[in-house]
Length: 327
Ligand SMILES: C[S@@+](CC[C@H](N)C(=O)[O-])C[C@H]1O[C@@H](n2cnc3c(N)ncnc32)[C@H](O)[C@@H]1O
Image (cartoon, rainbow, N blue to C red; front, top):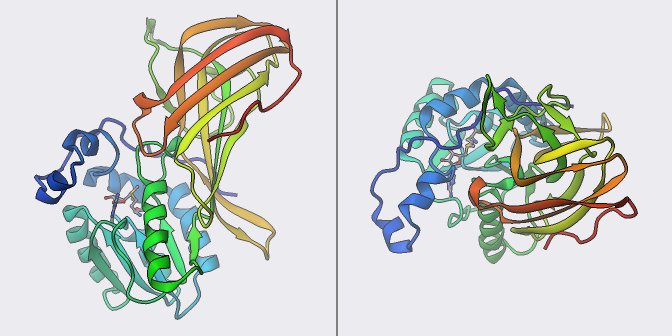
Protein backbone atom coordinates (compact mmCIF):
# COMPACT_ATOMS: atom_id res chain seq x y z
CA UNK A 1 0.00 0.00 0.00
CA UNK A 2 1.38 3.40 -0.93
CA UNK A 3 0.48 6.11 1.52
CA UNK A 4 1.31 9.70 2.26
CA UNK A 5 2.78 12.41 0.13
CA UNK A 6 5.68 14.62 1.07
CA UNK A 7 5.17 17.48 -1.30
CA UNK A 8 2.58 20.12 -0.69
CA UNK A 9 0.79 21.20 -3.78
CA UNK A 10 0.34 24.96 -3.88
CA UNK A 11 -2.86 26.47 -2.62
CA UNK A 12 -2.34 30.10 -3.36
CA UNK A 13 0.31 29.81 -5.96
CA UNK A 14 1.58 32.62 -8.10
CA UNK A 15 0.26 32.26 -11.58
CA UNK A 16 2.02 31.81 -14.89
CA UNK A 17 -1.21 32.35 -16.74
CA UNK A 18 -0.81 34.27 -19.94
CA UNK A 19 -3.53 36.19 -21.78
CA UNK A 20 -5.66 33.67 -23.58
CA UNK A 21 -8.27 35.00 -25.99
CA UNK A 22 -10.07 31.61 -26.06
CA UNK A 23 -10.53 31.67 -22.32
CA UNK A 24 -11.80 35.25 -22.58
CA UNK A 25 -14.35 34.10 -25.13
CA UNK A 26 -15.38 31.07 -23.07
CA UNK A 27 -16.29 33.42 -20.23
CA UNK A 28 -14.05 31.63 -17.69
CA UNK A 29 -12.65 34.36 -15.50
CA UNK A 30 -8.90 34.72 -15.17
CA UNK A 31 -9.28 34.89 -11.40
CA UNK A 32 -10.96 31.47 -11.38
CA UNK A 33 -8.01 30.09 -13.31
CA UNK A 34 -5.53 31.88 -11.08
CA UNK A 35 -6.92 30.97 -7.68
CA UNK A 36 -7.67 27.36 -8.49
CA UNK A 37 -4.99 24.82 -9.24
CA UNK A 38 -5.32 24.86 -12.99
CA UNK A 39 -2.00 26.42 -13.91
CA UNK A 40 0.49 24.95 -11.48
CA UNK A 41 3.87 26.71 -11.78
CA UNK A 42 6.83 24.69 -13.05
CA UNK A 43 8.59 24.72 -9.68
CA UNK A 44 5.74 22.71 -8.15
CA UNK A 45 5.93 20.24 -10.99
CA UNK A 46 9.58 19.75 -10.11
CA UNK A 47 8.49 19.07 -6.51
CA UNK A 48 5.88 16.61 -7.74
CA UNK A 49 8.65 14.73 -9.55
CA UNK A 50 10.39 14.31 -6.19
CA UNK A 51 7.34 13.00 -4.39
CA UNK A 52 8.26 9.34 -4.23
CA UNK A 53 4.98 8.19 -2.70
CA UNK A 54 2.96 9.79 -5.48
CA UNK A 55 5.27 8.78 -8.30
CA UNK A 56 5.84 5.28 -6.86
CA UNK A 57 2.13 4.58 -6.48
CA UNK A 58 1.32 5.75 -10.00
CA UNK A 59 4.26 3.82 -11.39
CA UNK A 60 3.09 0.61 -9.69
CA UNK A 61 -0.46 1.07 -11.01
CA UNK A 62 0.71 1.87 -14.55
CA UNK A 63 3.12 -1.07 -14.60
CA UNK A 64 0.34 -3.34 -13.41
CA UNK A 65 -2.34 -2.16 -15.86
CA UNK A 66 -0.46 -1.16 -19.02
CA UNK A 67 0.64 -3.96 -21.35
CA UNK A 68 2.92 -3.78 -24.40
CA UNK A 69 1.14 -2.46 -27.51
CA UNK A 70 -1.61 -0.67 -25.56
CA UNK A 71 -2.77 2.84 -26.35
CA UNK A 72 -2.71 5.16 -23.35
CA UNK A 73 -3.91 8.73 -22.85
CA UNK A 74 -2.72 10.96 -20.05
CA UNK A 75 -5.00 13.91 -19.32
CA UNK A 76 -2.92 16.73 -17.83
CA UNK A 77 0.49 15.19 -18.45
CA UNK A 78 2.63 17.92 -16.86
CA UNK A 79 6.32 17.01 -17.06
CA UNK A 80 5.42 13.69 -18.73
CA UNK A 81 6.67 11.41 -15.95
CA UNK A 82 3.53 9.24 -15.75
CA UNK A 83 3.36 8.96 -19.54
CA UNK A 84 6.97 7.75 -19.47
CA UNK A 85 6.00 4.81 -17.22
CA UNK A 86 3.36 3.75 -19.75
CA UNK A 87 5.86 4.12 -22.59
CA UNK A 88 8.37 1.99 -20.63
CA UNK A 89 5.77 -0.78 -20.65
CA UNK A 90 5.67 -0.61 -24.47
CA UNK A 91 2.55 1.52 -24.90
CA UNK A 92 2.03 4.48 -27.20
CA UNK A 93 0.84 7.53 -25.31
CA UNK A 94 -1.14 10.68 -26.09
CA UNK A 95 -0.02 13.12 -23.40
CA UNK A 96 -2.56 15.96 -23.30
CA UNK A 97 -1.44 19.17 -21.59
CA UNK A 98 -2.60 22.74 -21.96
CA UNK A 99 0.02 24.71 -20.06
CA UNK A 100 2.43 26.03 -22.74
CA UNK A 101 5.47 25.96 -20.44
CA UNK A 102 4.87 22.32 -19.55
CA UNK A 103 4.20 21.37 -23.16
CA UNK A 104 7.61 22.77 -24.06
CA UNK A 105 9.57 21.29 -21.19
CA UNK A 106 7.85 17.88 -21.26
CA UNK A 107 8.74 17.53 -24.94
CA UNK A 108 12.37 18.14 -24.00
CA UNK A 109 12.28 15.63 -21.11
CA UNK A 110 10.52 13.01 -23.24
CA UNK A 111 13.16 13.35 -25.95
CA UNK A 112 16.01 13.27 -23.44
CA UNK A 113 14.57 10.02 -22.06
CA UNK A 114 14.27 8.48 -25.53
CA UNK A 115 10.46 8.25 -25.59
CA UNK A 116 9.79 10.74 -28.41
CA UNK A 117 8.58 7.97 -30.77
CA UNK A 118 6.11 6.61 -28.22
CA UNK A 119 4.78 9.72 -26.46
CA UNK A 120 3.05 12.47 -28.38
CA UNK A 121 2.49 15.66 -26.39
CA UNK A 122 -0.81 17.19 -27.47
CA UNK A 123 -1.30 20.87 -26.68
CA UNK A 124 -5.01 20.90 -25.87
CA UNK A 125 -7.59 21.25 -23.17
CA UNK A 126 -8.21 17.64 -22.16
CA UNK A 127 -11.92 18.29 -21.67
CA UNK A 128 -12.40 19.02 -25.36
CA UNK A 129 -9.90 16.50 -26.74
CA UNK A 130 -10.88 13.12 -28.20
CA UNK A 131 -8.33 10.51 -29.28
CA UNK A 132 -8.25 9.46 -32.92
CA UNK A 133 -8.34 5.75 -31.97
CA UNK A 134 -9.78 3.83 -29.02
CA UNK A 135 -7.69 3.98 -25.85
CA UNK A 136 -6.96 1.14 -23.39
CA UNK A 137 -5.93 3.14 -20.31
CA UNK A 138 -6.47 6.76 -19.24
CA UNK A 139 -4.22 8.31 -16.59
CA UNK A 140 -5.43 11.49 -14.93
CA UNK A 141 -3.81 13.03 -11.87
CA UNK A 142 -5.61 16.31 -11.23
CA UNK A 143 -6.24 15.18 -7.67
CA UNK A 144 -6.59 17.43 -4.67
CA UNK A 145 -8.12 16.73 -1.28
CA UNK A 146 -11.92 16.58 -1.51
CA UNK A 147 -11.43 16.84 -5.28
CA UNK A 148 -11.32 20.58 -4.74
CA UNK A 149 -9.32 23.07 -6.80
CA UNK A 150 -8.31 20.81 -9.69
CA UNK A 151 -10.80 19.67 -12.33
CA UNK A 152 -10.41 15.89 -12.10
CA UNK A 153 -14.16 15.26 -12.08
CA UNK A 154 -15.00 17.76 -14.82
CA UNK A 155 -12.16 16.73 -17.14
CA UNK A 156 -12.87 12.99 -16.86
CA UNK A 157 -16.62 13.51 -17.29
CA UNK A 158 -16.05 15.60 -20.43
CA UNK A 159 -13.51 13.09 -21.75
CA UNK A 160 -15.98 10.22 -21.29
CA UNK A 161 -18.74 12.10 -23.10
CA UNK A 162 -16.46 12.97 -26.04
CA UNK A 163 -15.03 9.45 -26.11
CA UNK A 164 -18.43 7.74 -26.15
CA UNK A 165 -19.66 9.97 -28.95
CA UNK A 166 -16.80 8.73 -31.11
CA UNK A 167 -16.30 5.13 -29.96
CA UNK A 168 -19.49 3.96 -28.27
CA UNK A 169 -20.16 2.95 -24.69
CA UNK A 170 -17.09 0.88 -23.79
CA UNK A 171 -14.67 2.99 -21.78
CA UNK A 172 -10.94 2.61 -21.13
CA UNK A 173 -9.58 1.70 -17.70
CA UNK A 174 -9.00 4.77 -15.54
CA UNK A 175 -6.00 5.41 -13.28
CA UNK A 176 -7.12 6.23 -10.59
CA UNK A 177 -10.08 3.85 -10.64
CA UNK A 178 -11.71 5.29 -7.52
CA UNK A 179 -11.41 8.23 -5.12
CA UNK A 180 -12.78 7.86 -1.59
CA UNK A 181 -13.66 11.12 0.13
CA UNK A 182 -13.80 11.06 3.93
CA UNK A 183 -14.08 13.47 6.84
CA UNK A 184 -14.12 13.61 10.64
CA UNK A 185 -14.44 16.15 13.48
CA UNK A 186 -11.14 17.00 15.19
CA UNK A 187 -9.67 19.15 17.91
CA UNK A 188 -6.89 21.07 16.19
CA UNK A 189 -4.21 23.30 17.65
CA UNK A 190 -4.17 26.56 15.72
CA UNK A 191 -1.41 27.89 17.98
CA UNK A 192 1.65 28.85 15.96
CA UNK A 193 4.50 29.66 18.36
CA UNK A 194 2.02 31.37 20.67
CA UNK A 195 0.19 33.14 17.87
CA UNK A 196 -3.31 31.79 17.39
CA UNK A 197 -4.77 31.80 13.88
CA UNK A 198 -7.70 29.58 12.87
CA UNK A 199 -6.82 28.95 9.25
CA UNK A 200 -7.20 26.06 6.80
CA UNK A 201 -4.25 23.69 7.17
CA UNK A 202 -2.82 21.01 4.94
CA UNK A 203 -1.30 17.90 6.49
CA UNK A 204 0.63 14.90 5.29
CA UNK A 205 -1.83 12.02 5.07
CA UNK A 206 -0.52 10.11 8.08
CA UNK A 207 -2.96 8.89 10.69
CA UNK A 208 -1.45 10.70 13.67
CA UNK A 209 -0.56 14.35 13.95
CA UNK A 210 0.47 15.64 17.40
CA UNK A 211 -1.47 18.88 16.90
CA UNK A 212 -4.65 17.16 15.76
CA UNK A 213 -6.85 15.13 18.10
CA UNK A 214 -9.26 12.82 16.31
CA UNK A 215 -12.68 13.20 17.99
CA UNK A 216 -14.48 10.58 15.89
CA UNK A 217 -13.29 8.07 13.28
CA UNK A 218 -13.16 9.01 9.61
CA UNK A 219 -16.30 8.28 7.61
CA UNK A 220 -16.59 8.21 3.82
CA UNK A 221 -19.03 10.74 2.37
CA UNK A 222 -18.49 9.90 -1.29
CA UNK A 223 -16.87 7.14 -3.33
CA UNK A 224 -16.23 8.11 -6.91
CA UNK A 225 -15.65 5.40 -9.50
CA UNK A 226 -14.31 7.17 -12.58
CA UNK A 227 -15.93 4.76 -15.02
CA UNK A 228 -19.37 5.54 -13.53
CA UNK A 229 -21.35 8.77 -13.42
CA UNK A 230 -19.18 11.23 -11.47
CA UNK A 231 -20.97 13.50 -8.99
CA UNK A 232 -19.71 17.06 -8.69
CA UNK A 233 -21.90 18.28 -5.83
CA UNK A 234 -20.82 17.10 -2.39
CA UNK A 235 -23.73 17.85 -0.10
CA UNK A 236 -24.36 15.73 2.96
CA UNK A 237 -25.28 15.59 6.59
CA UNK A 238 -23.51 13.10 8.78
CA UNK A 239 -23.53 12.19 12.43
CA UNK A 240 -20.50 10.99 14.37
CA UNK A 241 -20.09 9.52 17.82
CA UNK A 242 -17.49 11.38 19.89
CA UNK A 243 -14.85 8.92 21.08
CA UNK A 244 -13.66 11.29 23.79
CA UNK A 245 -14.45 14.49 25.63
CA UNK A 246 -13.11 17.25 23.40
CA UNK A 247 -13.38 20.75 22.06
CA UNK A 248 -14.35 20.29 18.44
CA UNK A 249 -12.94 23.19 16.44
CA UNK A 250 -12.25 21.80 12.98
CA UNK A 251 -13.20 19.24 10.34
CA UNK A 252 -10.53 17.16 8.65
CA UNK A 253 -11.00 16.04 5.03
CA UNK A 254 -9.07 13.01 3.79
CA UNK A 255 -8.97 11.70 0.21
CA UNK A 256 -7.70 8.26 -0.64
CA UNK A 257 -7.28 7.28 -4.29
CA UNK A 258 -7.32 3.69 -5.46
CA UNK A 259 -5.07 3.81 -8.49
CA UNK A 260 -5.45 0.13 -9.36
CA UNK A 261 -6.40 -3.13 -7.73
CA UNK A 262 -3.65 -5.69 -8.14
CA UNK A 263 -5.61 -8.94 -8.15
CA UNK A 264 -2.46 -11.09 -8.19
CA UNK A 265 -1.36 -9.60 -4.86
CA UNK A 266 -4.97 -9.01 -3.72
CA UNK A 267 -3.89 -5.49 -2.90
CA UNK A 268 -5.01 -2.01 -3.80
CA UNK A 269 -2.38 0.41 -5.06
CA UNK A 270 -3.38 3.63 -3.34
CA UNK A 271 -2.23 7.20 -2.99
CA UNK A 272 -3.67 9.70 -0.54
CA UNK A 273 -3.76 13.45 -1.06
CA UNK A 274 -2.72 15.94 1.55
CA UNK A 275 -5.41 16.19 4.24
CA UNK A 276 -7.26 19.45 4.72
CA UNK A 277 -8.22 20.75 8.17
CA UNK A 278 -10.90 23.46 8.05
CA UNK A 279 -11.52 25.50 11.23
CA UNK A 280 -15.09 25.77 12.54
CA UNK A 281 -16.58 29.23 12.93
CA UNK A 282 -18.28 28.11 16.14
CA UNK A 283 -16.22 25.54 18.05
CA UNK A 284 -18.08 23.51 20.70
CA UNK A 285 -17.38 21.09 23.52
CA UNK A 286 -18.65 17.54 23.55
CA UNK A 287 -18.55 14.58 25.92
CA UNK A 288 -17.61 11.03 25.04
CA UNK A 289 -20.45 9.21 23.19
CA UNK A 290 -22.20 12.44 22.38
CA UNK A 291 -23.51 12.90 18.86
CA UNK A 292 -21.87 15.41 16.54
CA UNK A 293 -23.78 16.56 13.51
CA UNK A 294 -21.95 17.84 10.45
CA UNK A 295 -23.30 19.34 7.25
CA UNK A 296 -21.10 20.03 4.22
CA UNK A 297 -21.82 21.52 0.82
CA UNK A 298 -19.38 22.20 -2.02
CA UNK A 299 -18.72 21.67 -5.70
CA UNK A 300 -15.68 19.69 -6.82
CA UNK A 301 -13.04 21.71 -8.66
CA UNK A 302 -13.87 24.82 -6.67
CA UNK A 303 -11.73 26.64 -4.11
CA UNK A 304 -11.14 25.55 -0.52
CA UNK A 305 -12.83 28.80 0.53
CA UNK A 306 -16.02 27.79 -1.28
CA UNK A 307 -16.68 24.83 1.07
CA UNK A 308 -19.68 25.47 3.33
CA UNK A 309 -19.70 23.40 6.50
CA UNK A 310 -21.24 23.50 9.92
CA UNK A 311 -20.92 21.21 12.91
CA UNK A 312 -22.63 21.12 16.28
CA UNK A 313 -23.13 18.77 19.16
CA UNK A 314 -26.50 17.20 19.80
CA UNK A 315 -26.24 16.53 23.52
CA UNK A 316 -27.49 12.98 23.34
CA UNK A 317 -25.92 9.61 22.95
CA UNK A 318 -25.09 8.49 19.45
CA UNK A 319 -27.77 6.47 17.70
CA UNK A 320 -27.10 6.54 13.98
CA UNK A 321 -24.48 6.86 11.25
CA UNK A 322 -25.00 8.55 7.96
CA UNK A 323 -28.11 10.74 7.90
CA UNK A 324 -28.05 11.58 4.24
CA UNK A 325 -25.73 10.73 1.42
CA UNK A 326 -24.00 13.15 -0.91
CA UNK A 327 -25.98 14.66 -3.72
C1 LIG B 1 -1.28 17.82 -10.75
S1 LIG B 1 -0.59 18.10 -12.30
C2 LIG B 1 -0.04 16.47 -12.72
C3 LIG B 1 0.95 16.47 -13.84
C4 LIG B 1 1.44 15.09 -14.23
N1 LIG B 1 0.35 14.23 -14.62
C5 LIG B 1 2.23 14.43 -13.12
O1 LIG B 1 1.70 13.48 -12.54
O2 LIG B 1 3.31 14.90 -12.79
C6 LIG B 1 -2.02 18.34 -13.31
C7 LIG B 1 -1.70 18.76 -14.73
O3 LIG B 1 -2.90 18.87 -15.44
C8 LIG B 1 -2.82 20.00 -16.32
N2 LIG B 1 -4.19 20.38 -16.64
C9 LIG B 1 -5.12 20.89 -15.81
N3 LIG B 1 -6.28 21.07 -16.46
C10 LIG B 1 -6.08 20.65 -17.73
C11 LIG B 1 -6.90 20.57 -18.88
N4 LIG B 1 -8.19 20.95 -18.85
N5 LIG B 1 -6.37 20.09 -20.02
C12 LIG B 1 -5.06 19.69 -20.08
N6 LIG B 1 -4.24 19.76 -19.02
C13 LIG B 1 -4.73 20.22 -17.86
C14 LIG B 1 -2.04 21.01 -15.51
O4 LIG B 1 -1.46 22.00 -16.34
C15 LIG B 1 -1.01 20.11 -14.85
O5 LIG B 1 0.10 19.95 -15.66
